[in-house]
Image 1 (cartoon, helix red, strand yellow):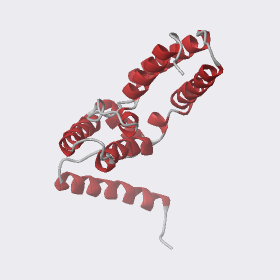
Image 2 (cartoon, helix red, strand yellow):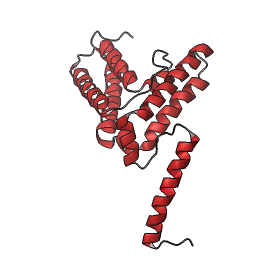
Image 3 (cartoon, rainbow, N blue to C red):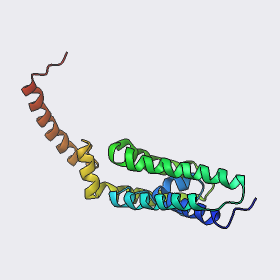
Image 4 (cartoon, one colour):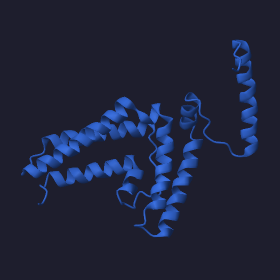
Length: 185
């Protein structure tokens, strides 16, 4: 059954918005255009996407549909939009869950490794793109601040820097343990 003239562009708009927010989900869905990207989930990007999702939901609610099948499609789409809005507006996994970032990066690479529906050269190039975005993400000041707030060290350039970090942290925590009188059992 053909979609109404109102529903088809709204679905297309929704999917475009969804894939821009989460390029890894686009890869999982079989699209190749987003394979070299990761979602940034910056405060500004999430704010803009939430506004766009809300506008899309309003347009969907106002659409005149011709059949029960279209009503079912609209209901399913509205549900997904509302869940996405709730997740990123209220739960904020991109702010409150460091595992969100790790999962996003690892899933992005994993899908490129296991999906055999695109040429190896494309998957290799896309994986390099995602790795470059990962490195840029880890160097971003907003990201570093977030990880520091979560007590996570984002990245080290070499083993010597990591070793120096461990020495500093051991000294810092040794003082805390001594001051608190903590003893191993």
